[in-house]
Length: 209
Image 1 (tube, helix red, strand yellow):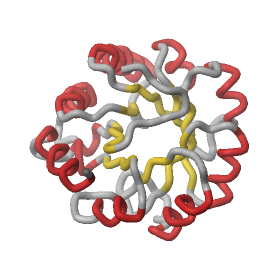
Image 2: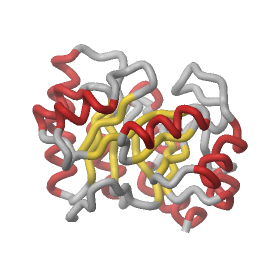
Image 3: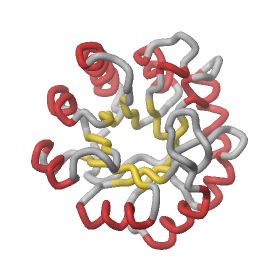
Image 4: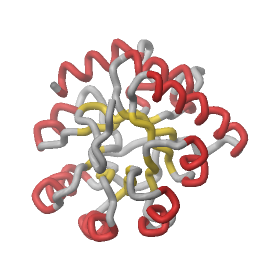
């Protein structure tokens, strides 16, 4: 799939989360996400060594290339460059977007996590290609307090940039998030923790579509 710079696919934005995956590896989960039809996957792993991360990222990058899936690396700009990932996602406490851009070049995607409208406006000014909006609901994957649907509504009204709604989104509340206007939606534990990842993705897509 030829990527248009600065865009992310509508639908489910997949993120790895091995600690929530019921014993399955990140690579196993990514295979299932791809089989389920997810078109963008972010590698996010906080607890492994750099060596382990690099080994996983190389394999996941290969899987994404073979299946025309956009591949984003969380935090590790150096590893993203190493594997020629499609982009990098950075948090509020990570490197400035201008510095990331100098490292990865103008043709790669940069995403920025945001938790308030001020963050979102700065991300736009700094040249981010998309933003993460959340956590919408309370979530076990992040320690931050939820920002609620109000922040999502503020972004929809005020920010002219692609965004991904993230944080505590599940099958039970995804319709509410979609109804407000979110075109790209991330779910971590709801997907990687599912008994059957492919079937869970199909069920979620029926709601989102």
